[in-house]
Structure formats: C-alpha cells, structure tokens
Image 1 (cartoon, helix red, strand yellow):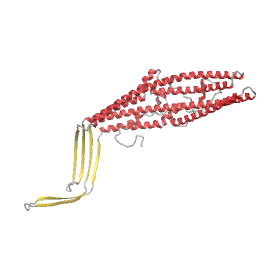
Image 2 (spheres, one colour):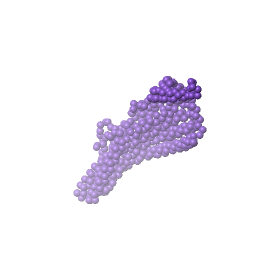
Image 3 (cartoon, helix red, strand yellow):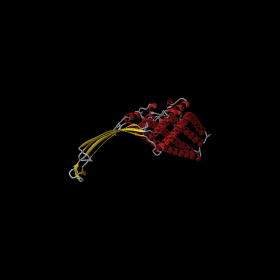
Length: 474
C-alpha cells in the first residue's frame, strides 16, 4: 500500500494526520457520512428497537378498546327426543286421576347476539389510554437513544479503522527505515567504523519494529471486524473524517442546559414518570363503581324444553351497576405498589439528569483535551524530526552512536502515531459530545438517508378497530 506524498520521515501534522489517511486509489471511497447512513439503515440493533416501538404502538388501540362495545354471536342446534307424562284429575270418574303422555322428536335451533358497552369504569379506560400514549413516547425516546448509540458506535468503528490503518502503514514504513539502517550499520561494521554492538542494536530495533507491525495488523483486523458488525458491510478505502463541533453548543453551560432537557435518556425517564403516574390512577379506578349496559337478542326455532313450542325469541337491554365494597384488599395493595413505582421513576429521572450532566461535562473535557493534544503532538513531531536529522548528522561525524539514531527514530515514530491517535480522538470526542447533548441524529448531521418516522405506524394503527395484518402486510 502506498500513501500519496508520504516521504519516509519528512513530516508535518498534515503528513501524519491527513496524508496518511488519503490512499492512492480511485476517487470513490467510503466516507464517514456514508458509513453512518449505512448503519442507520441496516444496523440490526436499531431495526430491532424500531420493531419494539411498533409493538408498543399497539398498546394504544388496546387501551382504546375499553371505549368500544363487545359483541358476540352464539348459536346452537341439535337433535332431541322428549317424553312427558302428566297426571290430572279425571272429569269422568270423580276421585280418580288420568295420566297422559306427550312424546316427540324435534331439532331445536337457536341463534343470538349479545352486545356489552361499558359506560363508566372509574376512568380506567381514559387513564389506560393516556398511559399507553406515554409508553409510546417513552419507546420513541428509547429509539432515539438507540439511534445515538448506533451512530456513535459507527463513528468510533470508522475512526478506529482509519486510525489503525494509518498506524499499520507507519509501522511498516518504520520497518523499511530500520532495514535500511541495519544495512548501513553492517556496511560501516565491515569497514571498521562501528562495532558489533551497533549491529546488534540495529537488529534489535528491527525485530522490535516487526513486532509492532504484527500488533498493528492485529488491531487493524479487529477494527475491520467491528466495522463490519456495526456498519453492516466490508470496509474499502476510507476517506478522512471531520469533527462536528458546529452542531454542539458553544459553551459548557449551554451544553448542560440542552442536554438535561433533550437528551433521550432524560426524556425517556420523564415519560416513564408520566406512565407511572397514570398507573396509579388506573389502580385507583378499581375503587370506583362500574356501569355497563348489555343488549341481547335470541331467536329460537323449536324448543329444548317443550316440543309444543315452534318459534320464540327473547330480547333484552339490561343495565348493570356494580359498587365495590371490599374485595380482599388486593386493590389497595395495587395502589400502594403503583405509588412506590412512581417514586422510583421520579428518582430515575433525577439519576438520568445527573448522568446526562456528568456525561456532558466529561465529553466536553475530553474534547478540549483532544484539541490541545493535537497541537502538542504536532510540536512533538516537529521537534522529533529536527532531533532525528541532527542525531544522524552527528552520527556521521562520530559524535553519536547507532543507538542514539535508533532511539531518535523510535521517538519520531511514536510522535507520528500520537498525532494519528490525537486526530482520531478529536473526531470521536466531537461526536461523543453531540450524543451527550442529545443532538446526534441523521437530521442534524444531514445524512442522505430516509429517516425513520415512528409516527407513521402509530397513526396507522391507533384507531384500527379490527384486522390482524400489520401495516406492512405481514
């Protein structure tokens, strides 16, 4: 693999942090934005969470079913024989009885319909509906949280692979330089300018460099596997990534204010509090009376009780009022339990806000450190380059040993690796801060990918009265 313009050890920050990421390849390359779009569209964890939101949407029509009538149709039929013997006083011979037998065979059939409508149940249906809506909003907040986690994982996987690719190339170039250094040292040993010790030192440095290449290759392969897992495709040539500071607040105070309000973990906890509060009201509804009305119509052809009945029907509308007095105390326990759960959810909200604030402050500090680290490592590279050139010149005139040259060269390699790592940390830290604030989304990043709108499925199923097929036809 060759890098455009990567001279062996002529360097600046651009050489280590940018040039070593630009491959001599066709213009088309994987970009960070493209990788994020693929992860947003294909990541299985994110798609699973979307399915969970769609499943939660169904809680609302289930709760709304309490407003709707329950209708059932029943029918029965069969074959039967009947025999009835009756005793009655004789009208001919006083004091005696007459026995008569009525026997026969018929096929009774009946069909009927029953409809029940709940008129009042202690506001339980209304509270269950609002609770289900809060659960839907909580599921959407959890989806946003998953989206942020997946996008941040995609950024990290992309930048890790970019970093490890650059480090692997640096280590390979270091081995090339060490091989040349060993060749020159052996030539000088053959003419008596250096000792066997110098040759051994050069050989040791070359072995150490080759070991570093093996480690870099292992890290590179691990990053490729992680990239495939998160992004969903095999990586090709990667274009440089850039930070997204422009989307984050300009000050730490503004970031904390925004994050504690719109961070999906905080909004999830808020909706969980709402759902827990409504669960208390649903439990309290068990103490209220219930009122329902039931309509019934049954048509009979022949009768199961008498073979002399040929046709009959029964129609009724019955209202039922039920007032609970004491039901064993379970309803009171359920209310207390729901109140304790509400208290827990409120504490969870406080915890979520504290966690969001801590994450924002930490991310802000890491971003500041990453910015400063880039400047520091740039200066380190420049100084190491000057030092290496000076040590080489001094070694030519016998003022420095081979070990001094090898040490100076290793310092420069480490400095270049530090620049690459600092550039990686700079980009990842900017995305981490954006996620901590709650703004890491396709809309904010401007990704060219259709965004998933959870409201579409919700509107499709909310007022559905019947049907077993999902909106997508399953």
